[in-house]
Amino acid sequence: MTRHQLISRIRTTGSYLCVGLDSDLSRIPQHLKDAKDPIFEFNRQIIDATKDHCVAYKINTAFYEAEGVKGWESMERTVNYIPQTHFRIADAKRGDIGNTSTQYARAFFETLNFDAITVAPYMGEDSVRPFLEYKDKWTILLGLTSNAGAKDFELQPAANGLLYEKVLTTAAKWGSPDNLMYVIGATQADAFTRIRELTPAHFYLVPGVGAQGGSLEAISQKAMNADIGLLVNASRAVIYASNKEDFAEKARKVAAEYQAEMSGYLATVPATR
Image (cartoon, rainbow, N blue to C red; front, side, top):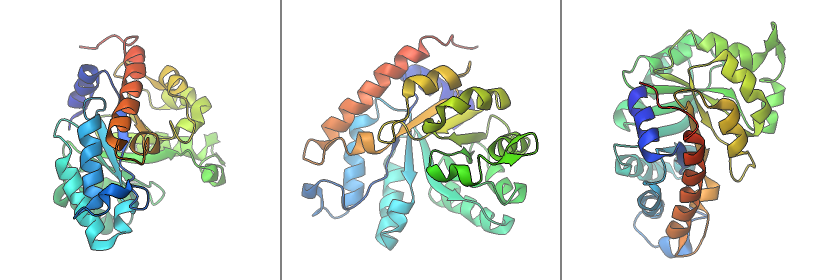
């Protein structure tokens, strides 16, 4: 998916919501557990219920890898079921020496046909380059994350700023706003003004809204640019809105509420030509 297509989809839908399919077999409704593929059946119903209210889905691969071969099969079925109109993110947090990253890129961009993958940047450019070489695919680099451990490295002084700032500005030279995004945690709302100054044109994938307590209003006000520049992820708040037979209906309701709020913020950003 190109940048233009992503922006157009956001405008058309009135939403920059990404639904996180962190589908945990232990948390899906009991009545689904007798299905041939319980995780896929759960995801299928969530996708059907929310697709009109979001523009992207993010599959956290750990929840699938933990189930072995069956989990990988569920993941493949899920990514193939997501409509082509929607942005499909593999939240895999890969990153290794070049020839290994090349195989990771093949796995997620060719075999599984995701549009984007999250990547850890700390092994440097050669570990990220294989992902960036794919046409119309996106590398989503970990920038400033929402976990408490961000203070251990990301928020440490480096050069004339903080380490995560050096990561953002250095990595910006490896790709472009057409193929490179950053993960910026919603719980780091106070940093968004500075981050937008450093990377004015890039999109951000923003986890941490919803169950982790990040403010959609604060993020939208501080981080939105002329091309919107945001994909805000909500996982548990949407997919686990209910653990009963009405789980999909409740997920739709929560996604629609996010869409309605986002539509209001989008109305303040003039459409660009």
